[in-house]
Length: 240
Length: 260
Figure 1: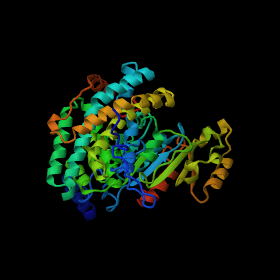
Figure 2: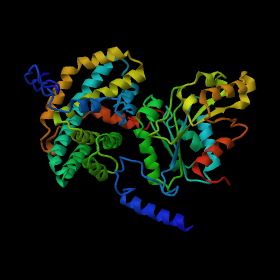
Figure 3: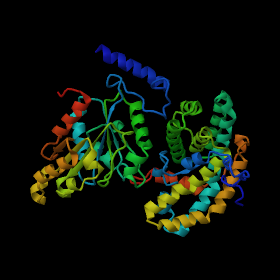
Figure 4: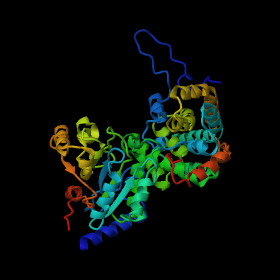
């Protein structure tokens, strides 16, 4: 494809000069990636409480999307490399596409108050890989008040699970009420833990107004079909 | 001696009833507070300044251990960082009227080299450059200036943190002695706040330790600021071998909470 070819030439030239847009410094701004027609890669934050299935969702999205777009992942696990190792161990992404960020006991600080380490990680990925379309930033497991800075991500997904109790959506918090997408995961466990999915759906919609809510079971749907479709729409990359 | 803190060095001008006196502080004191505040989004929160390693490897578990660690740190790497920050600040300030001439870039590069030579541990070098790059990113957004653009372009992996601190401080309007205080403050606050998070130490007790260290911090900052115009090779070269060794070991751990 002629257009793609032209883009990669430009990118190589820029990279060799080390000044991605020729005017802004490497430390100052996120260089645009030509991967999406010159746009910066789409940055999606994935947050939520410990154990709700964030890493499993990221793995599912990698499986679903890595063949159709240029994808990289930044993880913010409190144990630094735990989540990155999970992604590598399960072979969903090659090592050069995953970066782990240390968060000094404060995972929410690294995605909200001081986003510099995450921005560095994204830039390092952009500088070392072909033009990226999508960067998933997975937060470390935190509580219901964690939320991503819009200086770090374009959209955010908040993941809760039915085993955490069907009252979680009613409790609210910025993740539940304001995330661009709320994912309620592990629906297959609902019968075992006595969670009422209809109550969760009703409470979630009451908290979120028109913002979307998706129910998933990654054991039953390892490709997280609905979430992948939501991201595809944002990317404007047609599904295969 | 505590006679020359930034706030009190210059006596207030005499006041008259109907004209407000000029500000008693010659420096951009508000900028100093911003720069010295641990909440500045410049990456420091993820670092422990060697404390996480000392907890595991040297059995630092309590306030006594923390105070000894802080005293050692400020007297060695803290002093060096403060002197280099002050020198970088002085260098940028002298270049500012001609908007950062090539002389400034060369001087900053020289300071960066000298600091590299004073940092034997590769892991500490990496941590310092990462923090320098993050601070520069912050400075470029908060106090945009062509000198910072030039520094970022000249140091691809990031300048050492004290060089970045001095440069950012200069464009924020600070003088070398102010940035020396900021650097000394940073050298104890990073491990002290890490100790609160990692060991669950009583935060009031930790701040009481920090307050007790006040005279020591003032003395080191004063000495460092006095060297702001020294030749780079003559700047202090205090070392902390245990910190070098433990940081190297820390970097190999499979599980760690702090970046350094």
